[in-house]
Length: 119
Length: 283
Image (tube, rainbow over all chains, first blue to last red; front, side, top):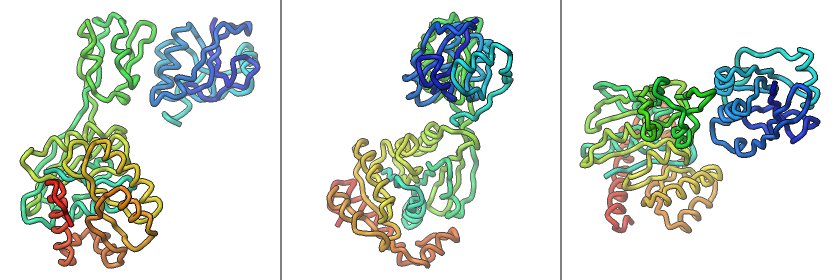
């Protein structure tokens, strides 16, 4: 299973980025904690609109089935829902800590956006 | 002739100048309230309302039976109003600017026109003034298509006075584009001058002749006058910072009605604009 984690850096030890659409990096990892891909999200950070839509599409295209992030807005959530990606929001700490909590089932999935558009 | 009142900074008195200019004239004028997010010109004119019509923008609706996921619409949409997820198109009508590009490039004819309500146009009359006002739907974030619809009501042969929205972004540019003369209404404060610089730069990009109306003259400092001189922009009218004038405007009255001396001043403002449009000296 592939998991997407929003991160301030290119490794699992970096603190997570609370933003989804405008996260600095999105890490695609497996459940064992191996980083499969590092997505540089810098182009999306500068996007005028639709950053969340684009990020959600990207992680779907990369085969993610779960997303661990801080805030997820309504447009991104609509895409993630259509893609069948489950979302754990309000997650913080390092990517590694988040993944560990996810693996033992400590991160609940949200069933609606937890942030306003353009927060 | 089309005259647009613009400002940069909000609250400088665009609407005050626009309604008084229109009311001061002895000839028919079409007043266009293009400040569709906060229209208020009608408050100063005792209009008899004639009717209204709604304005919508076309947004894409995708027929999943026809869509073959070729991505051509995704490539042309710069506002990301469409995305392809697991082979299916998802649309975000609230991001769509209604350009119709997706419909144009779709080889399968899978895109059809949906509609998103933008707001309404209102029509009215008062004395020699024909009035068209735009009013955005509450919750709608995009105003340029509605502003274009307001401007679309003007006839080529008419004298038109346009009350523009504040700022220097797309709504203001939409109101300003294609007019014959831009009147920048400003105030002699650092904030007024800062935004005036931006507004003048925008009007210059549109290659428009520009004149200034200085409202609340007497406050602030000399920097506005210095700027006007350096940029070679004529100051066409100055309205002093005066309690009586402020009270008249606050009551929703016209300055040219309450203080007849101002009727001549606004007629003179129009005469100067007309002269400048003809390439003549307006001194």
